[in-house]
Length: 231
Image (cartoon, rainbow, N blue to C red):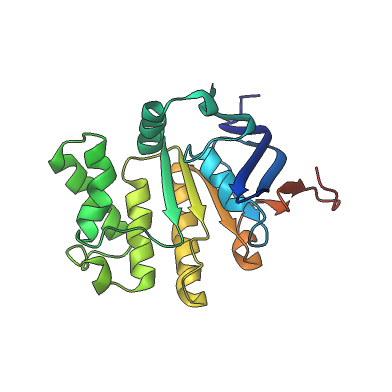
Protein backbone atom coordinates (compact mmCIF):
# COMPACT_ATOMS: atom_id res chain seq x y z
CA UNK A 1 0.00 0.00 0.00
CA UNK A 2 1.45 3.38 -1.02
CA UNK A 3 2.20 6.05 1.55
CA UNK A 4 -0.44 8.77 1.99
CA UNK A 5 0.09 12.10 0.26
CA UNK A 6 -0.61 13.92 3.55
CA UNK A 7 -0.26 12.92 7.17
CA UNK A 8 -0.84 14.82 10.38
CA UNK A 9 0.78 13.02 13.30
CA UNK A 10 -0.26 14.05 16.84
CA UNK A 11 -0.43 17.69 15.76
CA UNK A 12 -1.08 20.43 18.27
CA UNK A 13 -1.47 24.13 17.51
CA UNK A 14 -2.11 26.99 19.88
CA UNK A 15 -1.93 30.77 19.74
CA UNK A 16 -1.16 33.25 22.52
CA UNK A 17 -4.16 35.42 23.36
CA UNK A 18 -2.94 38.03 25.80
CA UNK A 19 -2.40 36.29 29.12
CA UNK A 20 -3.92 33.03 28.00
CA UNK A 21 -3.31 30.45 25.28
CA UNK A 22 -5.92 29.41 22.72
CA UNK A 23 -5.63 25.70 21.96
CA UNK A 24 -6.91 25.13 18.42
CA UNK A 25 -5.70 21.62 17.57
CA UNK A 26 -5.14 19.04 20.27
CA UNK A 27 -3.30 15.93 19.08
CA UNK A 28 -4.82 15.56 15.61
CA UNK A 29 -3.71 12.58 13.51
CA UNK A 30 -5.06 12.13 9.99
CA UNK A 31 -3.91 10.47 6.75
CA UNK A 32 -5.07 11.62 3.30
CA UNK A 33 -4.36 9.36 0.35
CA UNK A 34 -3.34 10.65 -3.07
CA UNK A 35 -6.43 11.49 -5.15
CA UNK A 36 -8.79 11.45 -2.16
CA UNK A 37 -11.71 13.87 -1.80
CA UNK A 38 -12.16 14.69 1.88
CA UNK A 39 -14.45 17.10 3.70
CA UNK A 40 -13.40 18.57 7.05
CA UNK A 41 -16.56 19.43 8.89
CA UNK A 42 -17.02 21.31 12.13
CA UNK A 43 -18.36 24.42 13.77
CA UNK A 44 -16.58 27.75 13.57
CA UNK A 45 -13.46 27.56 15.75
CA UNK A 46 -13.23 23.77 15.61
CA UNK A 47 -9.80 23.92 13.93
CA UNK A 48 -10.68 23.24 10.27
CA UNK A 49 -8.91 26.26 8.79
CA UNK A 50 -5.90 25.77 11.03
CA UNK A 51 -5.48 22.17 9.87
CA UNK A 52 -5.75 23.26 6.22
CA UNK A 53 -3.10 25.92 6.78
CA UNK A 54 -0.79 23.34 8.33
CA UNK A 55 -1.34 20.91 5.45
CA UNK A 56 -0.53 23.66 2.96
CA UNK A 57 2.54 24.98 4.73
CA UNK A 58 0.96 28.32 5.63
CA UNK A 59 1.60 27.65 9.32
CA UNK A 60 3.60 25.22 11.42
CA UNK A 61 2.50 23.07 14.38
CA UNK A 62 3.63 23.62 17.96
CA UNK A 63 4.14 19.86 18.25
CA UNK A 64 3.68 16.83 16.03
CA UNK A 65 4.49 16.35 12.36
CA UNK A 66 2.98 17.29 8.99
CA UNK A 67 4.11 15.05 6.15
CA UNK A 68 3.52 15.97 2.51
CA UNK A 69 4.79 13.77 -0.28
CA UNK A 70 7.24 11.96 1.95
CA UNK A 71 8.80 14.96 3.71
CA UNK A 72 8.10 16.53 7.07
CA UNK A 73 7.20 20.06 5.99
CA UNK A 74 7.23 21.28 9.59
CA UNK A 75 11.04 21.22 9.27
CA UNK A 76 11.25 23.18 6.00
CA UNK A 77 12.50 26.76 5.94
CA UNK A 78 10.34 29.55 4.51
CA UNK A 79 11.99 29.45 1.09
CA UNK A 80 11.29 25.73 0.69
CA UNK A 81 7.73 26.20 1.94
CA UNK A 82 7.15 28.97 -0.60
CA UNK A 83 8.24 26.64 -3.41
CA UNK A 84 6.04 23.85 -2.03
CA UNK A 85 2.98 26.08 -1.86
CA UNK A 86 3.52 27.55 -5.30
CA UNK A 87 4.19 24.32 -7.18
CA UNK A 88 2.22 21.65 -5.33
CA UNK A 89 -0.72 23.28 -3.51
CA UNK A 90 -3.71 25.24 -4.77
CA UNK A 91 -5.51 27.35 -2.16
CA UNK A 92 -9.14 28.49 -2.44
CA UNK A 93 -10.35 30.80 0.32
CA UNK A 94 -13.76 32.06 1.36
CA UNK A 95 -12.67 35.67 0.80
CA UNK A 96 -11.27 35.05 -2.75
CA UNK A 97 -8.10 37.14 -2.15
CA UNK A 98 -7.97 38.50 -5.70
CA UNK A 99 -5.73 41.51 -6.36
CA UNK A 100 -8.06 44.41 -7.18
CA UNK A 101 -5.66 46.10 -9.62
CA UNK A 102 -5.39 42.96 -11.81
CA UNK A 103 -8.03 41.63 -14.18
CA UNK A 104 -9.30 38.04 -14.01
CA UNK A 105 -6.68 36.64 -16.38
CA UNK A 106 -3.82 38.43 -14.62
CA UNK A 107 -5.01 37.14 -11.23
CA UNK A 108 -5.14 33.58 -12.54
CA UNK A 109 -1.70 33.77 -14.13
CA UNK A 110 0.04 35.26 -11.09
CA UNK A 111 1.11 31.96 -9.44
CA UNK A 112 2.46 30.72 -12.77
CA UNK A 113 4.49 33.89 -13.24
CA UNK A 114 5.83 33.48 -9.69
CA UNK A 115 6.90 29.95 -10.70
CA UNK A 116 8.76 31.55 -13.65
CA UNK A 117 6.52 29.98 -16.26
CA UNK A 118 7.04 31.79 -19.59
CA UNK A 119 4.43 34.55 -19.97
CA UNK A 120 2.93 33.09 -23.16
CA UNK A 121 2.53 29.63 -21.58
CA UNK A 122 1.01 31.09 -18.40
CA UNK A 123 -1.48 33.16 -20.38
CA UNK A 124 -2.47 30.19 -22.56
CA UNK A 125 -3.09 28.04 -19.51
CA UNK A 126 -4.93 30.89 -17.74
CA UNK A 127 -7.25 31.44 -20.69
CA UNK A 128 -7.99 27.73 -20.91
CA UNK A 129 -8.86 27.60 -17.21
CA UNK A 130 -11.10 30.67 -17.35
CA UNK A 131 -12.97 29.12 -20.25
CA UNK A 132 -13.26 25.90 -18.24
CA UNK A 133 -14.78 27.70 -15.26
CA UNK A 134 -17.26 29.58 -17.45
CA UNK A 135 -15.61 33.00 -17.62
CA UNK A 136 -14.59 33.19 -21.27
CA UNK A 137 -16.26 36.60 -21.59
CA UNK A 138 -14.96 38.02 -18.31
CA UNK A 139 -11.19 37.62 -18.60
CA UNK A 140 -10.44 41.34 -18.77
CA UNK A 141 -12.76 42.28 -15.89
CA UNK A 142 -11.41 43.49 -12.56
CA UNK A 143 -12.66 41.78 -9.38
CA UNK A 144 -15.04 44.65 -8.54
CA UNK A 145 -16.74 44.05 -11.89
CA UNK A 146 -17.45 40.41 -11.05
CA UNK A 147 -20.11 38.79 -8.86
CA UNK A 148 -19.14 36.77 -5.81
CA UNK A 149 -19.61 33.51 -7.69
CA UNK A 150 -17.51 34.78 -10.59
CA UNK A 151 -14.73 35.89 -8.25
CA UNK A 152 -14.68 32.45 -6.68
CA UNK A 153 -14.42 30.89 -10.15
CA UNK A 154 -11.39 33.10 -10.82
CA UNK A 155 -9.91 31.92 -7.51
CA UNK A 156 -10.46 28.28 -8.52
CA UNK A 157 -8.74 28.84 -11.87
CA UNK A 158 -5.86 30.56 -10.06
CA UNK A 159 -5.54 27.59 -7.69
CA UNK A 160 -5.23 25.22 -10.65
CA UNK A 161 -2.81 27.21 -12.83
CA UNK A 162 0.29 25.30 -11.66
CA UNK A 163 -1.47 21.92 -11.82
CA UNK A 164 -1.12 21.21 -8.09
CA UNK A 165 -1.23 17.80 -6.47
CA UNK A 166 -3.40 19.17 -3.66
CA UNK A 167 -6.30 21.62 -3.56
CA UNK A 168 -7.24 23.08 -0.18
CA UNK A 169 -10.59 24.88 -0.15
CA UNK A 170 -11.51 26.77 3.02
CA UNK A 171 -15.28 27.43 3.18
CA UNK A 172 -15.33 28.08 -0.60
CA UNK A 173 -19.10 28.66 -0.59
CA UNK A 174 -19.26 30.69 2.63
CA UNK A 175 -19.83 34.06 0.91
CA UNK A 176 -22.22 32.73 -1.75
CA UNK A 177 -25.94 32.08 -2.01
CA UNK A 178 -27.05 28.46 -2.15
CA UNK A 179 -27.37 28.38 -5.96
CA UNK A 180 -23.93 29.89 -6.60
CA UNK A 181 -22.45 27.75 -3.85
CA UNK A 182 -23.83 24.60 -5.43
CA UNK A 183 -22.35 25.58 -8.78
CA UNK A 184 -18.94 26.14 -7.19
CA UNK A 185 -18.95 22.71 -5.54
CA UNK A 186 -20.06 21.09 -8.82
CA UNK A 187 -17.17 22.84 -10.56
CA UNK A 188 -14.60 21.87 -7.93
CA UNK A 189 -15.69 18.23 -7.92
CA UNK A 190 -15.67 18.08 -11.72
CA UNK A 191 -12.22 19.61 -12.00
CA UNK A 192 -10.89 17.34 -9.27
CA UNK A 193 -12.28 14.25 -11.03
CA UNK A 194 -10.63 15.21 -14.33
CA UNK A 195 -7.12 15.03 -12.86
CA UNK A 196 -7.71 12.85 -9.78
CA UNK A 197 -6.32 15.72 -7.70
CA UNK A 198 -6.40 15.42 -3.92
CA UNK A 199 -9.13 17.76 -2.67
CA UNK A 200 -9.82 18.80 0.92
CA UNK A 201 -12.75 21.11 1.62
CA UNK A 202 -13.25 22.66 5.06
CA UNK A 203 -16.90 23.49 5.64
CA UNK A 204 -19.58 23.81 8.29
CA UNK A 205 -22.26 23.13 5.63
CA UNK A 206 -23.67 19.60 5.83
CA UNK A 207 -24.78 19.69 2.17
CA UNK A 208 -21.26 20.56 1.00
CA UNK A 209 -19.70 17.90 3.22
CA UNK A 210 -22.14 15.30 1.87
CA UNK A 211 -20.58 15.62 -1.58
CA UNK A 212 -17.31 14.08 -0.34
CA UNK A 213 -16.82 10.31 -0.13
CA UNK A 214 -15.06 10.80 3.22
CA UNK A 215 -16.01 13.24 5.98
CA UNK A 216 -13.89 13.98 9.05
CA UNK A 217 -15.48 15.97 11.84
CA UNK A 218 -13.46 18.25 14.09
CA UNK A 219 -14.82 19.09 17.53
CA UNK A 220 -12.86 21.45 19.77
CA UNK A 221 -9.61 20.70 17.98
CA UNK A 222 -9.96 16.92 17.97
CA UNK A 223 -11.20 14.42 15.39
CA UNK A 224 -14.52 12.80 16.17
CA UNK A 225 -14.79 9.15 15.17
CA UNK A 226 -17.89 7.71 13.55
CA UNK A 227 -18.92 6.28 16.92
CA UNK A 228 -18.92 9.81 18.37
CA UNK A 229 -15.74 9.39 20.43
CA UNK A 230 -13.01 12.02 20.19
CA UNK A 231 -9.67 10.63 19.10
